[in-house]
Length: 319
Image (cartoon, rainbow, N blue to C red; front, top):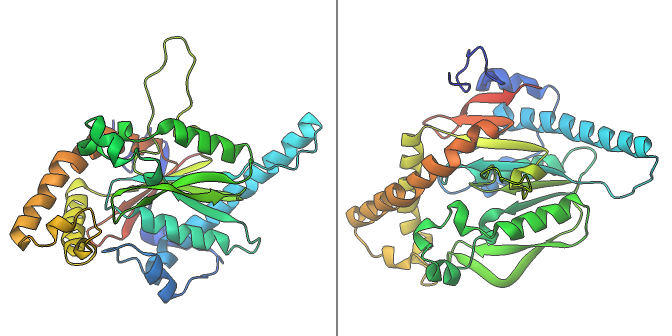
């Protein structure tokens, strides 16, 4: 039984074509311009205003309903406990999926749309890249070839950060990461100060762990999420997108002498393609199969992309 197949009797999801999903936008206004979408999308990602209309406006409307319901429950609990607690827990949205599948674009576009609701909520975006162990630590522990795998992250730091966010603590700091130097930036942070909504994006944010024998469980990252999204696509497409992106970066960002991957910029096209294939097969494909894809059924919303990198099907968990 595959519960992620449309029509499966016991599936916890409802499935919609992109065309049907687009109709759920109702009167949700389009608040982004073509230039803004172009600025927000990642390299090799063709998301445009049409895709925002088809997919993102309905997502914005759905999330608005979830946020309002969460706020109502918060007020009801205040009445239930007879307290006047002014600190409201932020609504946290987790976004997961493979490398090169389009998580960053989804997160950035969604952030802009949510921040432009009539209520003007404060929306922040944090990625898990900054919570990777520094390269120095990864080299010492023999983990450089497992960068992006669950054991390459400082999970304790992630849990402390999200716990503080959920507790409504002010000025929580998240470490910053440079994709140019391929490393955490020493001593550099982004300060997140009591947002109404936090988007937390990363390949392994829906990871679980083995159950403890004594029942004294340490929380997992997704325990702090109010809603979760998984960006999905067939393996062969993600493979092609990864290689295509690597080849594009070889002609752009890799040419910067400060780039960690600068050594690849002088390779021939064939040699660079071979390196990209090796990186995919030895690291990213392994991580996808072992750690990322198995978390897909834990998501509340699954966006399935087709060959053109645009969403073709949406799966929404039933209430």
